[in-house]
Length: 273
Image (tube, rainbow, N blue to C red):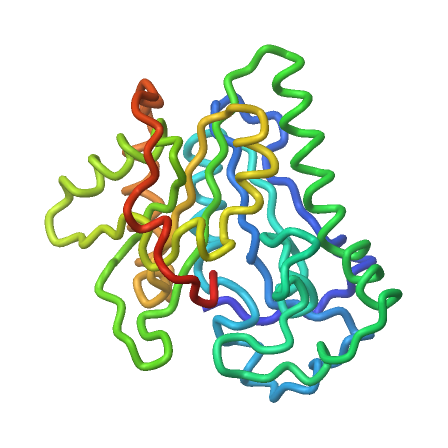
């Protein structure tokens, strides 16, 4: 599994773009790609081991997203700072934008922040991430390119004592254009349990990046969640990247018909990916 980054923000920047000239209609995002904490944040009061846990990032998601981007010739936008500093997949007014607690772990360095401190975190990671996606999407649309957004995440096998049976989940709202053919293709795979708006749904406030950049423009979009024990090593990462690439190759968004939300969208909110 990947380890914490040791470079500074000045060396790495807070957002990365892989294959900016990609010819694929797909634009991929990896919103929780890194567990890197800039030096000024120390460990936010956490033990070093905590920084490799899911609370700090989505383990395995970035290698899968990068392999998909390469195989599809797609553009990928990735965060390079831990979501413990600020969660780029949350609106600015979200209570867990700078999470004081993640899952069941208190984050001491995230409590009692001043407005100035919060603004600094927005500026260091959240704003550059969304500005970058904005520029890429606007440029593609200005050039008349098909643009379909997909975000790649991972989730824990057990959450607050509850086992999660899904190998992969597809998250969507009432726009089913990408989600429907993607779910159908995944459900045809032997031995794969597919969650539809599981383990999260848009009601859990996990859909912000897609709402901001795709739904606001009427662009097809979907969110992928892979259980992180499936992609903890190179073999699993390659397997899922190959499976998803195979499905995405030649995939066309379905015609949007009924705009009824999935039953899971309205379920109770839980802490999110």
